[in-house]
Length: 177
Image (cartoon, rainbow, N blue to C red; front, side):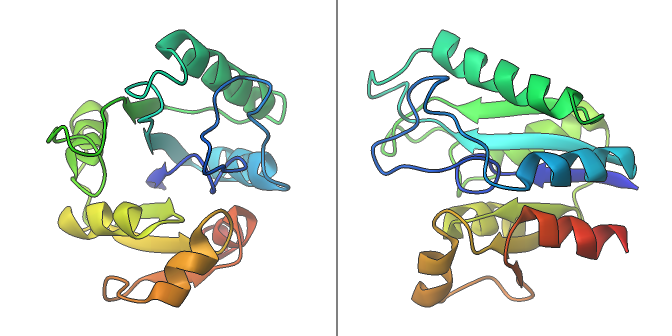
C-alpha cells in the first residue's frame, strides 16, 4: 500500500507538556499499537517522525529515547507489526535545523530512505507543525484528536484538505477500508 508517517507523542503514546523522559513514562494510547499493527499487516511501511527537544534541554538522553523506541517496537512486534524507521529531531526550537517540524527535513529523509515520493502519503499528527511539514512535501495531512489534537483543531488554520479523525485506530479504519 505504501508508507505512512506518524508523529509519536500524542498519536502513538500519551503526551506531556513536561516531556516524556523515560521508558516508564512512555505509555501507548489505547488502541494505537493495534492500529499500527493493522496498518503494518495491511501493507503500510510505518515511519515515525518525532521532535524530541527534551534531548537538547537535557531532560533525556538518546539512550533514553532508544529505550522508548525499543519498547514501542516490542509492543508492536507482539501484535504482528513492524516499524520501518524512526527519525527524531534532538534540537531545540531556535536552533534552525532542517529536521524540526514544521520544517520537512525528517519527512524528506524518510522519502530518501524509502525511495518514494511523498505526494499524498498519509502523515498523522496531533499538532499544527506536523501538518505543516506534511503540506510542505505534498503529503496528506491527517489530524488526530488525541494528544494536542483537540487544541490544534480549536486553534484553526489547518492546511487545506486536512482530514480529522478521533484517533489512530480511526485513521487505520479509514485507510484500510
